View 1 (cartoon, rainbow, N blue to C red):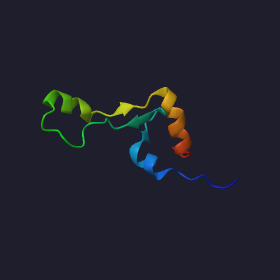
View 2 (cartoon, helix red, strand yellow):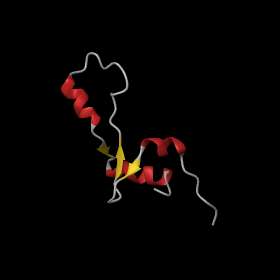
View 3 (cartoon, rainbow, N blue to C red):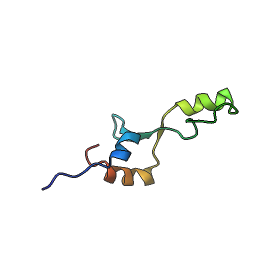
View 4 (tube, rainbow, N blue to C red):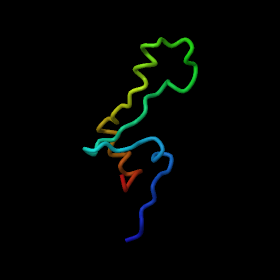
Length: 65
């Protein structure tokens, strides 16, 4: 069997937890932060789980995750 290629863009954005779930970073935290409240910015720090429907697509992009 040939080796499978990893989508490098996806590899930079997702990682797996110990139980095999896929974790992502939250959006809206890269720029234009001045007008966002501290509470909102604090909440955006936490990582989020990828939805189960999307997780299958991410697993195809990351065969060795």
